[in-house]
Length: 418
Image (cartoon, rainbow, N blue to C red; front, side):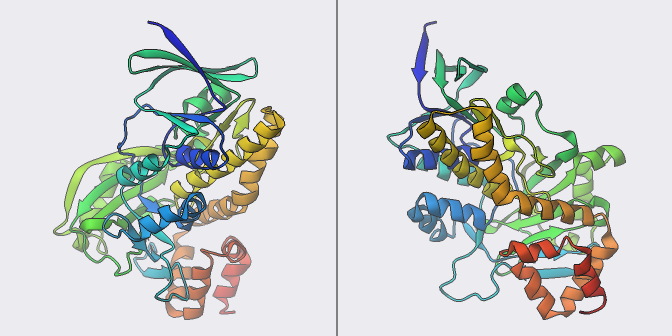
């Protein structure tokens, strides 16, 4: 078998949101790059299927027409206007994402199956600067002589591809992370999620609020119900891996038990039908800062452990990190500098400057979920107080306000009605 050699400016492994986000902005900056994925699109990806305002922001920056295409197709993309928190005591609190909504207001977020969304992003990637290899079998990756080298088999041909920078956008089991950082993820910052698709779930909010049910037996994790287009719903659970091991939790059994027996949930599934099988995946959480680059390589999305510790959001952070990675690559190209020190400053530090405070607050909120009495108390107060509900609503768009949730003084004020 003849070995063909290719050279480019950047190699991206993974064509999901993190890889697509990187590719979009490399193309905008006219930087040649090659995207490699082991799958052939469209392909499924186990996920909660919820896209936040961060997802919309990045897509809009890449191409405003793409966001318009999404928002004008409610049969494929379901607009979501808020979130419902259900406390351990069963009391629900509806929090709109937008406090002052008008007819002209665009939905801050949306839901759709990852099979559809990832294919949408994939079909937007082709450009004069982007080459895509689907169904590729990577045999080896290494950095040598100031170049990243990827050896693979594509369409029965051996290829050796080299570039000064390699982007690992290859998910929670990242080969790039494992190869260059000698690890997959930190076990203390990982969680496990299960996803199932149901049709016929009742009681969904008229404005398609996503639901987080903080059941006592799952804390500090939760069960979610996310409405999807065409009468479907994404239903799943997410719990810290450490807790699963400590309590020897059968996650699938616990999820099905809650659906069948929880007094708030079970009636809504009385006539619901499970579509396809229940599937699981790893959730590398951003509980603590971890390295995301080194000599001639960078990590984005789940490969960089950028899942929000509280909400579980991964898609928006993957796209956002891809956008920042493309900017760092542009700077590296301009300065011909792909060293670990340069990429840490141009990429790692920028990611944590933009997202670090958000991750810290979310990590604190996740830890607070270990105390169900506190969660119950806040929800009870907010249920009775329109001003407190409005404050919590604003916290989704204002990080300074959201940070108050992680401070003891916030709860003292609620306790003493101040």
